[in-house]
Length: 112
Figure 1 (cartoon, rainbow, N blue to C red):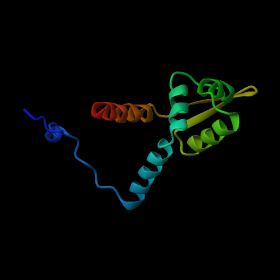
Figure 2: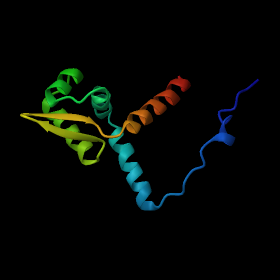
Figure 3: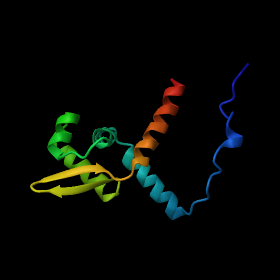
Figure 4: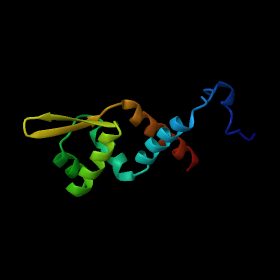
């Protein structure tokens, strides 16, 4: 028996019709999340807020590269910065971003 990839279509969420502006904003979010190093950063800070140096150590990337990605993610509102003394801590703003990554990973894993 062949299983249809559309087996749950009747219970799927009905798509919302988005305006061109809304579609553009969604595309921008996906574009930001389309960079593997940014995903690695999000994965690194999902459990607890970390400083740039801690993120550099965890990702094994260089500081200027991490700073560039953190700046883009913060500007987009995906992460937040909190200054504590001389340190700045970065954390995930919305856990749904991580959930989205997990959902996509689940789909990709099923296809392998």
